Length: 333
Image (cartoon, rainbow, N blue to C red; front, side, top):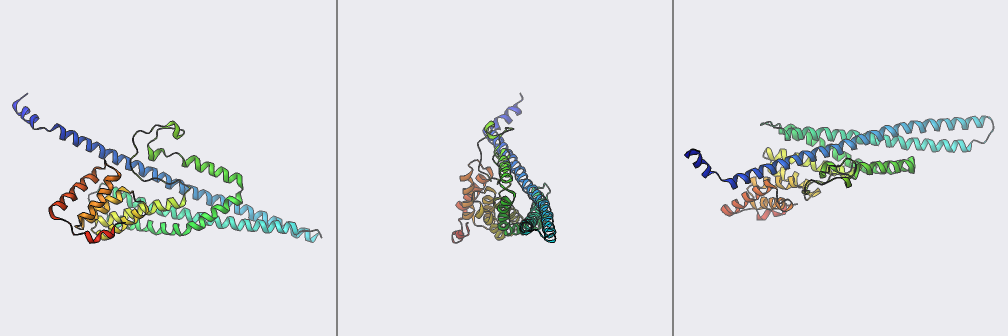
């Protein structure tokens, strides 16, 4: 080995290099986990969309059948009247079928509306996410925000519609009878109990057969596909996070902090919202508020590299030049 090689080796810091490799591996693991979470979330969205579409189609078909039965009974009742027979029973049964058909038709329209709103949310949110997660140097933040805002409008409409949808689900259970209801519940349980995508299980049948590969890190708990209110909440968090990210990148720091606050109001352990809101306060030259946010990230996940780096960075700022944000702590969620 030459003297120059010995000199280079003597300067090489093995511990520092190992630390750098560990940090790189941890970042890669975090990125893989985030991608896995995105795919699991999209599966939930798709399942909810398909269920709404199926419900709308089934209810529309049942409404048509009920309407035909009602016409048949009424026609039979009129025939009995012409023949001088008692037709009260047929008329009463016909009225019952008409009422059932009307309810089923109303429910079909509600689920069709739900399906369309879910589609609008999914398409616009995914379009915004694609821009945000893209590798282009110059991203179209205006288009991304426009997509997220369109998704937000549809989410608010879905939330407004949710009381009627929940009531329709109850009525649907009564109209279809206990057998169909039990079958549906069993199907929901089948798809909702095991969370392989989000928790890292490796089994092919049930959770009891799987092994958790790693200790679960703090993260977003995904809703079941049949839990409408939880899905609406998930949409709100994703959309506000996207809007806040766009505002942050374009320098609208106050607007960004408010958007991230909307996420944290709904989920106070949302790591991405905590760290991004901290970045907004840091760029507002309010390192104390930023430090409180970054400290929250590290307290939730002690291995969060970005959180630890940001925390050390703002601590250094506080030591060198102090902080002027004591009067604005009320902005915290």
